[in-house]
Image 1 (tube, rainbow, N blue to C red):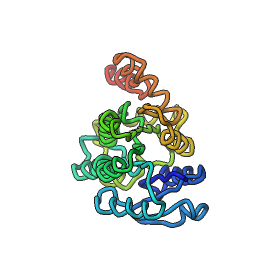
Image 2: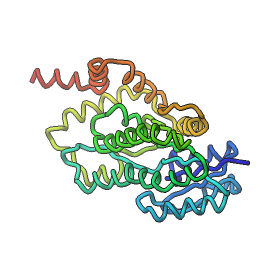
Image 3: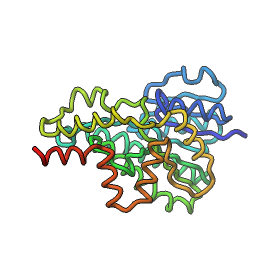
Length: 282
């Protein structure tokens, strides 16, 4: 009997690719999104069931779970993928924008967990894959709000991984690096509501120049989807799964270095050392 996964945020990007990955591997997929789009199921209509789910609305979560069970008989895994973010200067980021990001990225995950954990406990177990980010363990500048939400997801997931082990429920964290399919600095929120104060512009420009000159190797959405699938199938008690060469490199630096070495290296990468030296010489 095929297993079934419910995935949030399947309309575009990682959620969309991940849903198709699971279906191609023989899983039944409950592909959820705020505004249902049946096109995701065209290639595999027998495997993919599309239904509405808004992670900020607990009732819609319960309805989606019930619809998934009605369609496939059981749900064996959940992928908490729905979320979003933006680049900004913290000082100039409005509180309503901050709260909105936490509502989706943190409380949205909590809402899904609150709904699915009792169900998994009832059927004897299950697997939950929470999509975090390399920003969840290695905080970059100019993404303070998004970074805070992912740190919250990391802490929540680690704590629950111990707590739910007694209930035969596994928690996994997949930590992608930067995926070019995201739109951190071009989103409507970033460009229309959040300005860059003049006093930050020098460092911001230095960082952008550094990233443009040395873009590095980013995370490919298809490879990240493969890591999500791997995590969902992994029966070990492993918690964290960095996804993408940039995330893997950051994870190695973060967990194998001293705090002093890690912070110095990050400042070098981000161009902050050059900016500081330039500021001193003015």
